[in-house]
Image (tube, rainbow, N blue to C red):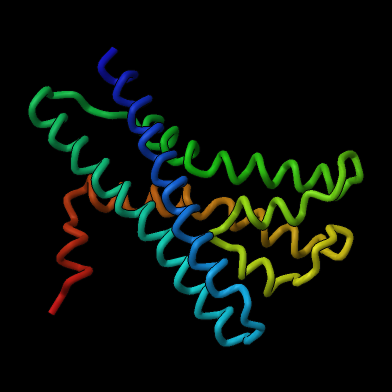
Length: 178
């Protein structure tokens, strides 16, 4: 019971991180959106990607740290499926949005590309670099594949950071190495 309750609270906390990331990245993107400079767009992509991945890694690090404390105090061993579930819940909103985009590309619903870009504020300028158009018909299959791969970034970031942190590697020492 304790595992299920804590799993739900961890998933909800992770979704909170995603919402915070979305707001922060949209603010940065919309602040710099008026520039047509490729250089500024690349800087924006770097900034929003670092913010997004950094928040996911911070969440994974804190989750692993808390899981280690619970494991030591209560002698509870957490399964791989637990961390997989949390990581999948972080990518699921982006995968669902991509599926809507794919359905839109097939012509079953209207043009979803503009909304897709805004709902993926972390990669808004990257999507503009990939395809600056506003119509989904201008997006190629290869570009759709790239967009799908980007949906997996939260999953991969969480799994790698959680595994490193849970195995006892202090990421703060790596990050702030002299």
